[in-house]
Image (cartoon, rainbow, N blue to C red):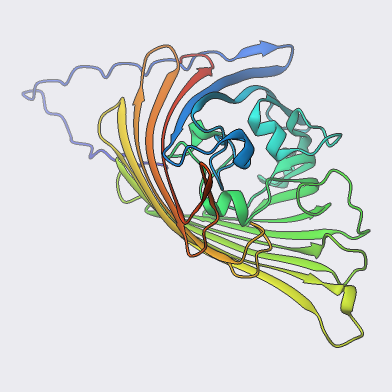
Length: 370
């Protein structure tokens, strides 16, 4: 969120007392560097209590339908991350090394499993702000990101976990077309793939419209996925409206619609199409410089069971309290209630249609000035 400040100039007369000189702004801390690369990182750990008390025999002792803080009734390491970044001019580069439950869920074995992102960039001055990236990068879709510290809640939403991809491998562009809008085209190897087995390219189209009181993002991905043949397409439409009415209060609305068209039956007049959609609303209030609260409510309709494995409608509500300590420590305390129209949540010695969890996360941010 960008906040604009304005000041009215007044003509001083000899009889008017002179205002004191404004204090010089504090200098930004110099980044830590390894050669030309700026270095940052974080360590993210948590404890999550699940009222259903799932056991190892039930589902591996996990919170159902979570992703990065899945471990139930036990401490867990969500992620330890190290970032090396050189902002692009004629040439730039970024690599994010990650370890913990996060990297095991995002990356398949032998798919750069300890690398969240790794790409080179170019942004020549003559291109007027346009940028090209080549390599592995996180998806443009969604209202949230992989790193908990950069979201409002500690756990990620159902839409983030089940409706959209995590990352892509290929080429992406970002092209400013006005003072407020940037568009982009991506040519990538499908969803969550370094190499694509279907032999086709997924196309991504992106748009970001940034206004003083809101930001509107639209992302479309379409391309072959899962089955052989160019007609086996997976499509995704994702849009988020971020509301920024004042410096302390923000909110967003996120909508996703996806479909996976199986071409195995092409020619027989019987295409198989799996569909899913979802809607999420979240709000964040900065109470003080160190304290904030956030809430999120959403519904995810996996109507054909393509994402979760069961045809169902999932819903969840999350409430989060955040406190920032000195020396880069960020803490979150979160209550979450998930429920479904099908009994798909594991409970000790059985199944049920809901789940209640309380999670406490602590994140140490490693960066200058923290």
